[in-house]
Length: 245
Image (cartoon, rainbow, N blue to C red; front, side, top):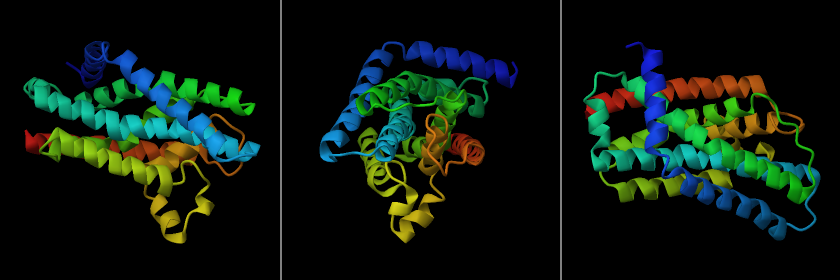
């Protein structure tokens, strides 16, 4: 069986296995992001159009981060706990195809909530968003670029509870100390430098470039860097799973 056929079949299997969880995950994700969009409007009176664009696209990016760093490792940790991971690893399939299929399934699950967040944000702040055809690619690559961290936590963490705690700590960092909800220039010098090596920086830039006309975005560069992060993440994660297996 070729790699592409394995990948296609595994994506189909993952989406079917998650169909009962998708409505709940979508509802929680939408509630989380819409709450952020409205909450910042109450917190910051007199929001300018530029600030509103950062809030809306940053919240959408936070949805990508949440799926890549929270949902993905939790699904994998649950799969490990229930024995489904061992079942997949006992099959004659490529580890890379399995992980790529899992990342794709999570990315597809993220799409509706993120698009809904952008629509609600545009309505709430009276914004004219300009959606680019590469927006879905930016979302999928955003999840993939974060996959390595999420999968590593799920594979090496001895307990599901520890995985959940670690993911929450990372979300806290991304929310307040990464250029997701704010321009990179507003961060201290040290955080500006560390942001260069953080996938959420490029996910936020790509989502802004594919949904707004904000200046200073670099779509091609961000997509390329996220693709490199994604390839490295999935390759290293497959190696980790082989060693643990």
